[in-house]
Figure: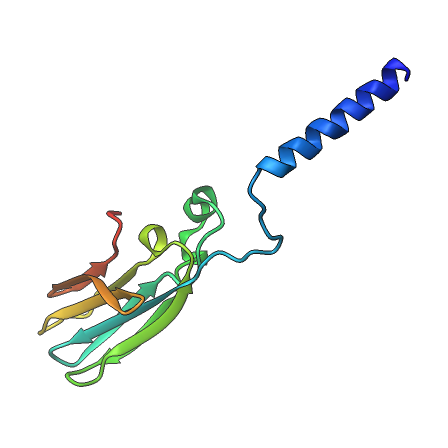
Length: 139
């Protein structure tokens, strides 16, 4: 065997040995998705703006460059017994789940509340007279 052929054979043997001890991973494995439920309510009638995260940004840099691209805004009319609820799927809710509600410049006579649940378990709730923020992460 020539030196070049021996080098190729040695490389192939090394590659075969390495793949035999490495755990197999299936191509196309999708990350596990989590069901995230956002709920916003008010104890008095209120017109509000609601921002929420509905997708995982690809990177922190992408999010930082344009957070509103990943945080849609809904305008909602709330009242006792009439809440705003949105369910989304996120890969990393500990990093990205977030809902924020505000009355904006409109006066509020009541208390706004938010609640965030991941896979059916409430992980965050908050309330305030002009707004509230729910997120498992400190922003």
